[in-house]
Length: 93
Image 1 (cartoon, helix red, strand yellow):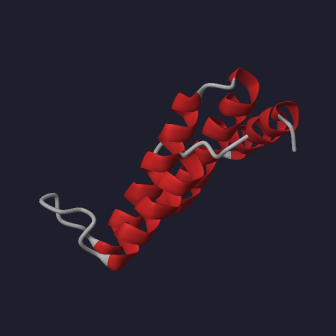
Image 2 (image 1 turned 30 degrees about the vertical axis):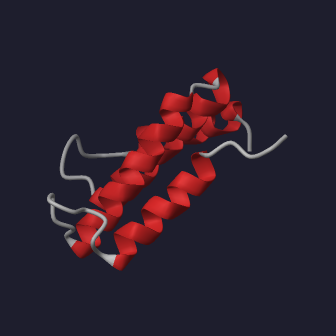
């Protein structure tokens, strides 16, 4: 799916949201992630990928409550960090 299709879908979602606040955090996270992905596809800015990575870490933190002293202490957080690092590390071309 390309950025134009994502733009149209996000516009439809935005038009269907009937509340200004109190939106389910899971839905909000998914919509925000789609927006970052669309922006990345349109503008090829790596910062959008980093935003996706941060949201992913926050999602895991919400589920396992990692401590600020060592946020990689939980196996779930360490696995997600390793996955993100692997995806963001350029491979040989």
